[in-house]
Image (cartoon, rainbow, N blue to C red; front, side):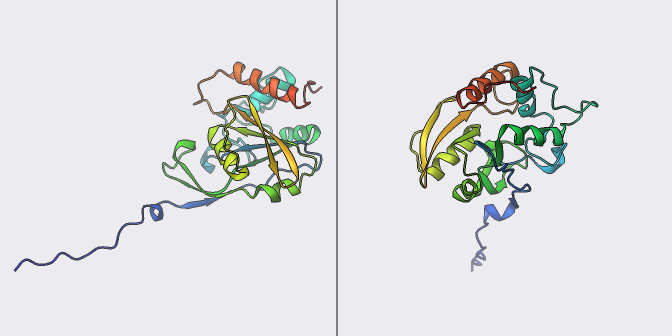
Length: 212
């Protein structure tokens, strides 16, 4: 007599990965006219500060240094190992730029910072976020994952090209939504070229002048 094999419970693949909630509070200056949204922060072991774009290999703050100060090292600490968090915060408040991400809860299927293996479980509550920055009329996404997530939230079927934008309605507010290049070094574009792209975008939304 052939013994019947025991039935096993199907494996829930998702249960093998830990869900992560966003580790940072939204950075929302009251005067914010623009909101920048990435996808999700990298694993904490890669952080050099407790703020957005904390991985020293990520070039966002070098881009900002070039755009506004013509100096890629402007927001880098003297030891050249981390970013100057308080200077970045002060600058963003002075310009009126808010920061958060398009995901509040995710699963990392490879345990790294790659958007390719990032599953968004809970997207950002955009209406709640915008209610706290009433002067914001521009959203800037930093990469394709963030852009696709934002377009889904806003129920927009058209994805803007890199460095382009679409108009979208959120409640009674018309927003200009820009898709910008990722500041990750994995994105195939030089730091100088990315800085030029961001400079043109900031000029278009009224942040043209360089800071002193």
